[in-house]
Image (cartoon, rainbow, N blue to C red; front, side, top):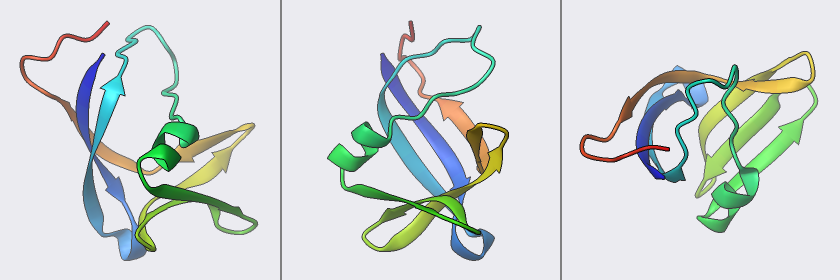
Length: 89
């Protein structure tokens, strides 16, 4: 497990950098999984609203959103960087 920094598109397409902790690196997976429960435990709020998709807020500020792609919600991730010196599983 390790830490990853990601940049997401938030409100008005403003880029926001987030740090995710306790991340498991699984290069053979075809999609990334994101734990809403873990985000909730660290103060984030998730809202799923018709016409808006899944939106993630922190202190009432939109920090990430998504669009529905078949049966999954696809996040609007801009970029991510693995933290140097961190070993991933």
